[in-house]
Amino acid sequence: MEYFSDASYDSDHPDEEDNIIPLYTERELDYMELELLLDTRKPPPVIEYAKDIGVVALRGAVLDLKKWTIEAVVDRMTVHSWNDFWRNSPIDEKALFDGEDWNAIGEFSFTLCLACGFDNPNISHVQNVMLALLNFGNFKHPK
Image (cartoon, rainbow, N blue to C red):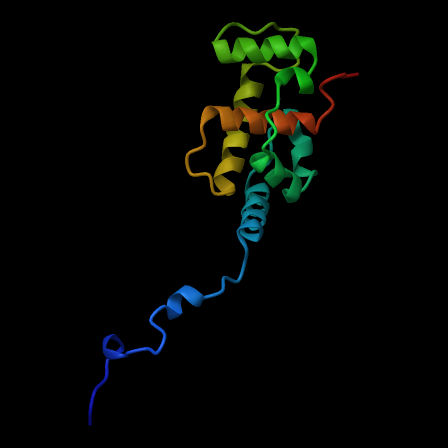
């Protein structure tokens, strides 16, 4: 009786492994990761609406090529709060967001980037995701 190991198996198609069709697309995998993230971790209270906008919109915020500006998404006082936060300066107590809020939004944005396959997103990418998330809220003309 002869013994044949898998190592001695000579396939007719040497690149047979390259023809494996994935079960899910990258987009579907991102959606699954984002759903899992939302099941295990809620957005910070200041952007709690992010749990209701859906994984498609969240993924869009991460992959968005538009370069958002803070002035386009929030009121003037919050622009100063944003600038003070990134300068590590004191934030006015009357501001809509304080340092803890900005940290929470940034951490959540960073986590979204990781869920969408960005292993080491840079700060400008995280900032852009933060601004895209703020754009979903009503911070430009708050009531």
